Length: 156
Image (cartoon, rainbow, N blue to C red; front, side):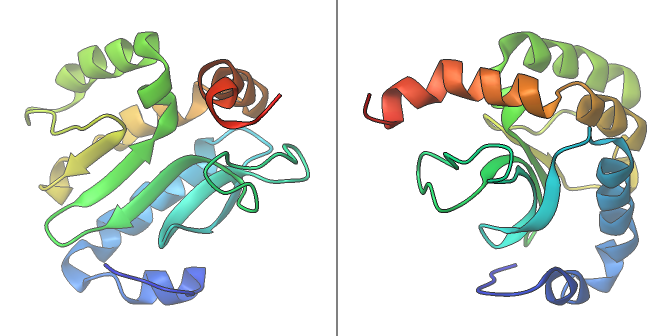
């Protein structure tokens, strides 16, 4: 779904009917399980769960005017996508998730560096997503982000 300057309600209203229930359940799973401090807002044309400038004033190194991203969810043409930057930046978390996914789904894991693609929406492991969402606090995410990305991006 391509978007520009839309609201959260606009985004949700444009989700295809055949995947709306699953998408809303994924969003609700994240909202119910994400640690305190993250905020929800449209980010890069998707629904994002971010560290606000009030907690991390430096913002995102690619564009410091934007809050630090953490999780995004999107309704794409052929799948629902979950982007989790903690998986991208933490090999232990990635290994845990890959091992656990096999215990929660009969489907083959379809994943990029931070993108988990769900083509069969009736196969989304919501309980696993809930557990994954709980694993990283705002403070831990900031520390992880700074240890891996900040030295490459901000001048000293």
